[in-house]
Length: 585
Image (cartoon, rainbow, N blue to C red; front, side, top):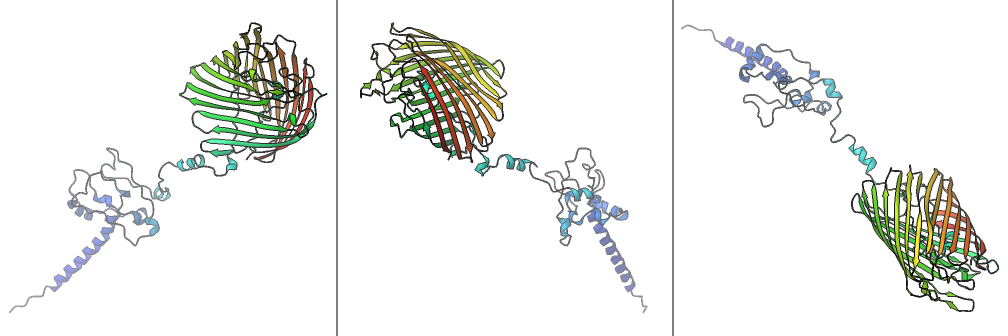
């Protein structure tokens, strides 16, 4: 029996060859996983199953490990993105996920998507370019949205909660109101109103000391209260031989209202005061004035306007309508409303306004107790105003204006048997000027004619001059000038009416942000038609306002007024000194 050599040696040789093959495969697998682009072939080449032997036969040199971070292996950072809706080619092996034992810092690096491949580019053909490692490590994480949106919203859209940083400032003068007569019937007590005893519009305050106001819905309310004490040498405003000086106590209340609407506007301003004279109670009197304006912006070129107004005051003793024998100051009131529409045609501006005013008077009392009836002076006035202006430039707008009105008394005949109903016609021409917000003015001049129902009363023809000017000489100094002329009603027998000319001038200067001084003067002239009665009056005012903060201020004023009249015992001279505290809640 022959014996053959056992083939155990062959089996050992096969086992050694298998081990060597496994070692080579284990060395090539990481290289293949580190460079997945080697597994992709150009179009028209052999299938991936045939490419494996070629890759093993001619392997490319391995890339250093630092060029391909382990945290990015198997991701889409090194390969072109597959088109949407496609699936991997059959027979290909998806890239292996990153191992859990890799460095956490490297695995958290941002992963950037390659831009869309252009047709014909290398990446579109399956050979993408590798981004630089420095670019991968230096690029910041991708931001969502605009880089400046959050900062812009924080600076412009967040609400400031500190009210001290959001003062409510009264609207600056952007235009001068239309010149109107001294109320509907003139000013029955123009002497008292212009020569220091009437209410004056408060001067604007510095923004750092301006009142904040109270927010009520879409409105801002600015209340104020002033209490003053002082001395008046002639509170009756009568001849010095009959005048009695007295201690003066003045209480004044103000209320301003302004809307905060995106379109249209509503503003209101009311002021009321009571002057108390302990040593001369007959001279104590109230005083109030107020206006409200509503503007409705229908569209860019059309707007509707509505205005209401009122005045409450007392007649001066020694007035020609009362006579020197009166011992009390009768109260009178005037109130009315105006409605209109304004249309703009390119540079042409047209406006039409209708108005109605009513005036009522209280009876006066003589020294013997006899009453002077004044109910026959109660009357209504209806007016229509047409105005046309053409804007030559943003700084100058000339205009022409026509005003028609009629005055109808409650009593057809007064106590002297005269019928005082009348009709009036006025024509004026002027210009509105606004230069760089430093000078704002409106000046007009013309003629007026008034005819009366009673033939015994002469018609009145008089000039009309109206002016309103605000001039900011410097950031610290402001000049204000106003002048009005008109024909006022009277009850003097034989007189058709009185031609009135009134002018005021004020100069305000801010010594400090919280200290303002105001110097002013006023002029008044009344000439009664048909009778020999003339009045000339002057006044001078000095005033200071010292503001401790937004809601508390100290105010002092001195007023000198004098009037010269052809009526006996009607001329007078007075000095008034007041010192008070003003509170703006």
